Image (cartoon, rainbow, N blue to C red; front, top):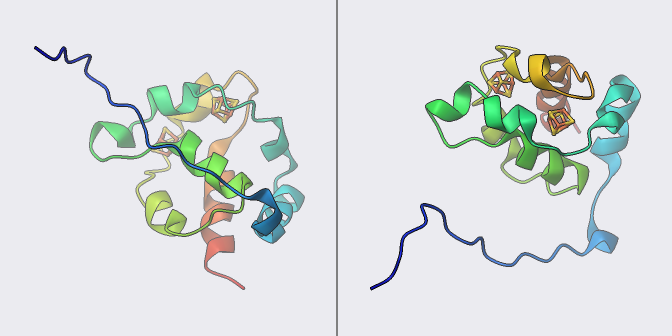
Length: 110
Ligand code: SF4
Ligand code: SF4
């Protein structure tokens, strides 16, 4: 009988960094330089208010944005309620609300 551990293994994913567009990342880092301080610890995701109601992983969104994988991120970021809880737990002191708002804005501009 198969044992359920309550989680599944993600599909393998390969990103060719040579084909990534880092333009939006550089724009975001110019507006909010603190974005560079993120160490991807995941504390923001663990405490996120929105994920109690919808499937949403802010750490994953940030990682995809950093790698220039921007498809569908605008819809994902719309799930954020801008409550600021993530900022309270971030060990690097990132204020994620302006970062999220700027990501939203940059994703809708050319
Ligand atoms: S808690 Fe802060 S350092 Fe950790 S992943 Fe989130 S933004 Fe990055
Ligand atoms: S501001 Fe957004 S990402 Fe941060 S805890 Fe609230 S809903 Fe989650």
